[in-house]
Amino acid sequence: MLRLEFETPEQFYIAVQSLHDVVEYRQFETLSGREIRLPIESRLYVDGAFEVSSETFETYSPSTGAKLADVSAAADSHVDAAVKGAKRASEEWREISIWDRRERVELVANSLEQSAEELTRLEVADNGSCISKLADDIQKASKSLRYFAGIAPELKGETIPTEPGTVDFTKREPYGVVGAIIPFNHPAAFVARKLGPAVLAGNGIVIKPSEYTPLSALYIAHLLDGLDVFPDGLVNILPGGPETGEAVVTHPGVKMVSLVGSPHTGKAVMRNAAQNLSNLLLELGGKNPVVVFPDTDAETAAEGIVDGMNLQWQGQSCGSASRLFLHSDIYESVLDEVVTRLESLTIGDPFEYETDIGAVVSGRQLEKVTSYVNDAVDRDARLLTGGAKPEFPQSGNFFQPTVLEPPLGSSIATEETFGPVLSVFSWEDWETMLHNANDVDYGLTASVWTSDLDKAHRTVDRLEAGYIWVNNHSTHYLGAPFGGFGESGLGKTECLEELLEHTRLKNVNITLQG
Picture 1 (cartoon, helix red, strand yellow):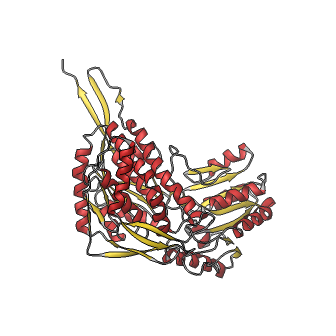
Picture 2 (spheres, one colour):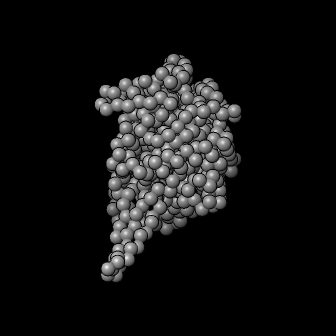
Picture 3 (cartoon, one colour):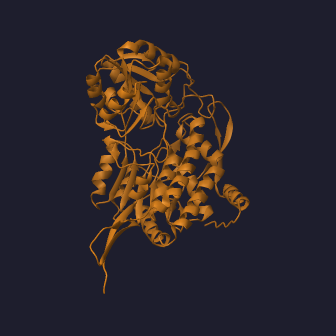
């Protein structure tokens, strides 16, 4: 293992730059013909060392179809070694003061910032989303680490009133090993978001990235390996398919499982985690309503709706606006503006900053989005714009931003499409609209658009969602609890509660002698 020590920012920068010597660089041609270099790591990171597996899987660029790497797939033996290493490392790590942990995690944040350019290129090639937003993801990853490092001293207990001669207090202790499963839409950001609270609470962690986007997670493993700020084995990166995730979740040494994924995956994780009664933190999908009142300016509403669709990620975001409830008084004016804005967006090379919409992450995901739209049209949904692959680019997993007027209760109106698709409904009666807005299995996000504070508060109170915006849709603030109701998950993230979830609460009762 490469060992680096540093005491000044200059030494730190040199340390990060030296990592370039241990990563294989490969040439990649973007959709627009530019040649760029990508740092490729395709090995597993297990118990402080990189390993090659006998089983591999291929990862491709969604925008060009070019093969990027043959990535090692973790076997059960790798999972076992990673969990045991994480357990051993956590026992060492928990003896380190919270102040020292903070400093070390902040060094990791520095490392992400110093390597932001390479990480961003790798993310765009492997994920297909627009560079303008994936560059922000690296900054968000760093901020997330700094946020959790900053609140780490809040990992404290409390004293409980008792009777004379006794003392009762609580203390927070780590679980030991956390298993984390992350999706394809924000690969590097989710590595940081899972790593931060887990290790600051004193745990080791085993991270299973999506089989569609494993490369940035493995590059982060190289940064950690070179920095040597954690005990060997504290952080493990194990690429692989669903079977790898299942092996992580069912391992008896994993005492907590943290997942970002679909409700289907969440339910499978719950079933598997029940074998060990592991604690769960689940951030799952959404079918998120946007409610627009007639007092809203048409252009303002349209701009917010389009922004809320998260098209820089092709709508592949669990909090994306996917159901629009427009009041009949402004239905046509707002809808016309939304369609006009969508049709003016540029679909193309995600490496170009002027591109508004990149590529869907995989051929499988593209087929899913296409089948939902085709099924809706076959069932008499009115297609207002989009609905197919664009004429250009002809290659790659591209799909036009799409607006439909489907029947209430149809599949596309109730199930998460996870693509650039918006279903639109007209409403007049407030109670009926609320019923329809809440009549899905999900409850992640929602937004309300009005200048009437009374209407806003009353509607917020009635919407079944865990995170609601008023006159906005998509902005996140660290410290604001993010998480949903129903099949949108369990627990809250991006806040103190997430940090506390990574600890067990122990009560101590003392009877004083004499």
